[in-house]
Length: 303
Ligand SMILES: [Zn+2]
Image (spheres, rainbow, N blue to C red):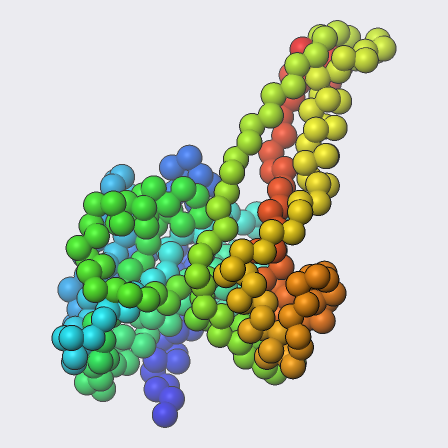
């Protein structure tokens, strides 16, 4: 039975969390504390005893435990991050930090990644508190800082310094698994995340011969750098199907009545349609140039 108050709170909490600007610009430029306090207050309102944990002032994580009815059962971790990637208001038709509800939808940065889930976690726990519901398993609830950058102030810090808070957890529900994936045809898929892609950052530095922009220069450092960046961005990496990725492809294909043919993965992904999104980024490495910097004056070729 739908708990109308919980449904209303999901919308209200999502909007209010969006209005708390937790843009993570990397390099430590973020402050999750107000959002963490917002979440902690609502957890306390559900009768829980949340801990606020920081490695760096302002970079706050929230952890709480809901006691299950079966102490012998493994615990389940349910987690969401509090930070968001930055948003340029000029690119948006609705202000990204307004949390506006328009056409029955909450708009703003974090509405899908992932203040929506943070709000759902809070609303469900509060609904349970009102109705006296207790889960069978212990639940560990974690709202983390710094997911959109290094996680050093967030999950990394919690795992390194406070592993005891996660004792007994054998599975987790977070943003990379166990959410509802809508494939566009009315089918709902619940993927299980067994791992994460890693990142390997590369900083390229090109050198050349300095000179005036009006002269012929075959040793232009900017041209060299641009060429290298283009090659990296356009590079097609070889297929590399790990056992986990093979398993995911096999099960997804079966869901659509298909045989997973690993000899033609491109065709298989094509046949999977929108559901290919769940796996296409995992069948091979990929590279994206994200920042470029060169020169100091428009008519000078830098060295
Ligand atoms: Zn996210």
